[in-house]
Image (cartoon, rainbow, N blue to C red):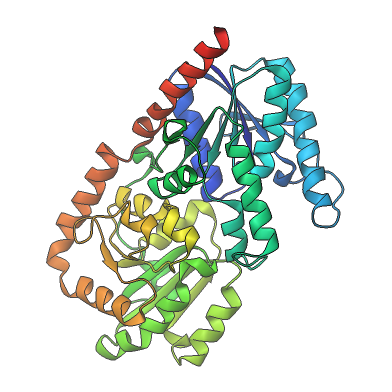
Length: 402
């Protein structure tokens, strides 16, 4: 029986695309009959115990070191991860050490793997330096950006195999001089059984939100700059002129929250835009049901051109309709006019036009809903995605045995 020790940035009970993908992968691997073990880095934060059971999965936690200045802080995080990992690896005797991005996890795993003679794989969901650009903590091409990129490349050249989530990231890894045979895509997917088809809008909540008698365009998620919600607001006044009954429902929160509210005021549409704030995870589907058409207006940047998001797949699983910008991460998932509607990234006019066209042709909606649902049922499900680990793990353990 295969024994895999996963090393993660953070995990459930924290909620993020990262933790949901992780939980799906772990359950998929266990369904194959493998034993999986899970260690989180100090970035999980302080926890009540060294070992926590969450939703049927057991997580080993790393101690949180004292914070220090930039550089020293990262070294302390890596040292804490490495110490805890070596202790666990000696105890659990895994066949493979599986690091998940960022590179702060990969480096300790490479060191422990070498010391103990255990094969190491590294799964990249996004490059740390590109995420930092979006969060505004560095600029593309800065010293920090180049240093982080160099660390990622250093790690990629020292592991036994790389996994990544999409073709865009795979091409970037290969361009760094990594053999194409050493890089495997584990595509983002959904557990279709975990999603119910969208239901009727709750009339009580509709009244509470002030959406009665309105057509609603919406977004549910974290308000990061790369999501392009500023573009959605820019497109909204022109849409309102044509469709006075239109409302914008923005569910969630994040770094751009205050900027977006100020922008709605500036554009004179604040009374037509509903900001709900963050809602409990169990309530999210009630808010989704209030939305006629979802919008994913991501801006074009390295992060969005290379990385495929989960949201469009989750929308398809629920039979929901959406417009999305034509960034590379979306084009890899969405068949334009069939499972969703693509528009030119960065253009408020193109976004307004795409929304208007979708709302004008509701007769196409049943067919699009069915096409999206079929795509996730037959192609983008976790059983298919997790199957891609099998030949790699088997080859590594055979080599180790030999």
